[in-house]
Length: 240
Image 1 (tube, helix red, strand yellow):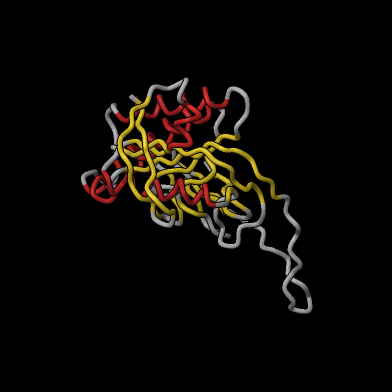
Image 2 (spheres, rainbow, N blue to C red):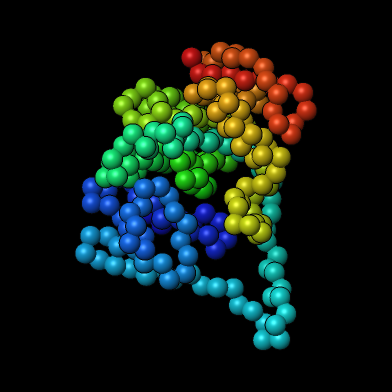
């Protein structure tokens, strides 16, 4: 799969194929960013990836940037990543790595897709997904989170999940090829993911997300902790 992840940014993802996908003669073991003229080999077929470059003015001046539509919306933000991915992958054979990680990504993607979410970007050993809030969205998010928790109990890589809810800016041109979802709440979600890693917590739900899910998904408080860059301590929850 080639996933468009931002303005002019594309990533190649192998979702656990038996014979593998090769990028510039190296087997794809995790999502890889594609560059112009990269060679992709699948079975006996080879493809050349072409990415159009931004037009430049004949005078050498910087092109005028197109004004982008930026709007704010309430969003559910979910991050998942493999725990201690380097050590985990070192225990696998070279042939097993892409199958195990790819099939894990495929199972997670299916859960997100079935519950009307969108994977905004792949992060090497994980992904960032979101839902625009609307009537019925909280139920879909709860089902996706429940499915991911069940997946955590199955054979496969151990992984973390964090869920947050808040107002974000959507759209615009990202200067560094980052996500098209922007703002403090996006940063908060990524900081929670780092916190979950330091705490060894398999799942963290922010207070804002918990309030929105309270009547749908039973949760239990799992403590308070500071979040880097955000004042005070914050209460976190986990599905029961």
